[in-house]
Image (cartoon, rainbow, N blue to C red; front, side):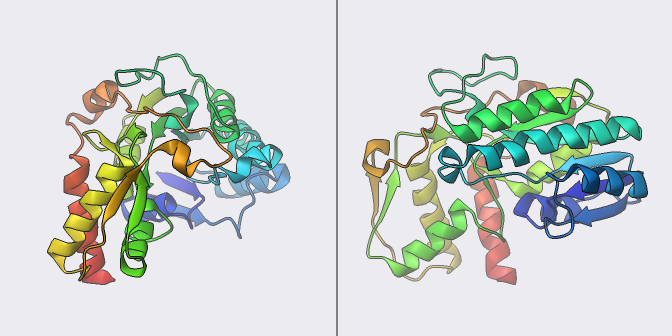
Length: 285
């Protein structure tokens, strides 16, 4: 099998390359190599490489900036997905597309099933939902949330930096979701694609947390591993105290029952994966 990864320079794209199954011929293209919003480039790459599988790890992820630049977000998160889907269909490839918990409004009190009604509150969420629809019925669409990895820009690495630099760290405590370790997500995408799964599914680590809970756990694990030498107070704040241009869902826990059934096992708890990631940083920097 031959697979094409687009957005290979991002944290998920790098993890997809590392976790690729043995025997897969891999073509990994970063944003500087392939502009997925350029139709001619997309069609040319897919026609030249003729992959069996296209994994889309690219996208516009600047949630607040998207509020004032929705056209750019739509181009990357929706139009580009339609181009990839069309090119995949023309050449007999399967598309794997990664979406987000931001397609929901956060008003639910129980985890969102893949079939739950969508109601995005932000430009980012609207453009990602449009991308899901343009991916087509034959695609595998996996919604995820709060993704982090040992490299790249993410909440864990930001918290570690702030905890070294500041006397205290203030973190939102009234947004509830679940962290997701990127290597685990990448492995799940490969496994689901390998089984020919289509439709919308959800994947995060197991468990539930607020951003405040996540930050406290980051500090505890980093102190235990010797990655931090001093403890900075972590102060819980309300979303209204840290309001940005984009409205975020207050509750975005995803129901992963269908994904567990496909994979044959539940995902690890987010705290266990956080510990794994901290150990990875300690070992490799």
